[in-house]
Image 1 (cartoon, rainbow, N blue to C red):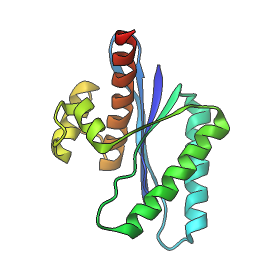
Image 2 (image 1 turned 60 degrees about the horizontal axis):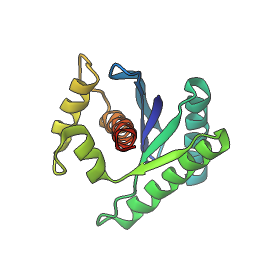
Image 3 (image 1 turned 120 degrees about the vertical axis):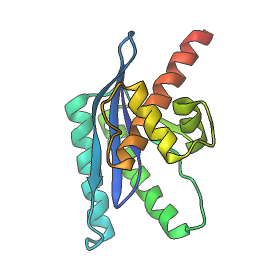
Image 4 (image 1 turned 30 degrees about the vertical axis):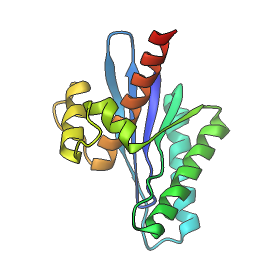
Length: 162
């Protein structure tokens, strides 16, 4: 099963493709889609939509897993992240790919076993779980890989309960 994990953001949207092939997890691709703060918001969202659509068409994932919106202190940031999430969900829907959503806490628990893991712990566990030589860069890509891992673990646990 192939999952496209997404760490949403308007300036930088992280993505990571992880496959569960019955023998464990395997990284397929990861990276980040960046937009310029000089561009108007509509243009930035259009670029994110187009790039995510290209990823979906190229890799044909079984699921898109996206991090749920975390409301912190900065409402402006939360709004732009919400918009980025929206265009990702739209791209998945247009492509007929189901979307699963996970909170930051769920992602941390799935990747590290600890809900209060810091960013460095998360990155090290992603590296270890996917048997990578280096920690994925940028941070947004490592986070997206963790979201994909969370989904694949959730599906695996769900199938064990049946």
